[in-house]
Image (cartoon, rainbow, N blue to C red; front, top):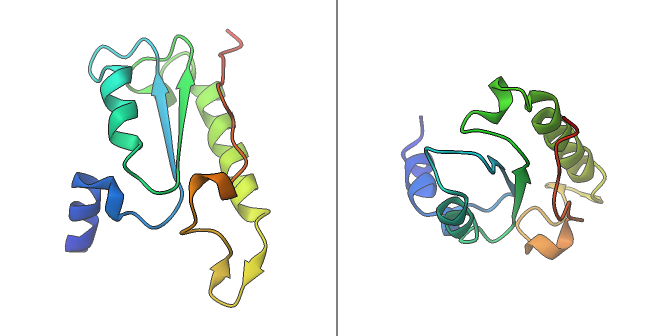
Length: 107
């Protein structure tokens, strides 16, 4: 793993691509408030709360909702205008990427 990845994980302010954080509101390991505060350091970040989701939202009862959020995020990235170096707006502020304000589990 490149050393820069570890630094970026420690300081999300160093991340220059859009970040999607999917967090369960029933997470007992990492409180939502602390997780949201950490993610807001990234220049282009989206924090999605999964209603009823636990710490590992991709492997609990909310896994379909978490997967849908990820697919929608990736589809929105794919829809960004392309430049010679890739999708435009990847290092831009979060406003460049349309948001999902809150995602609620269907369960």
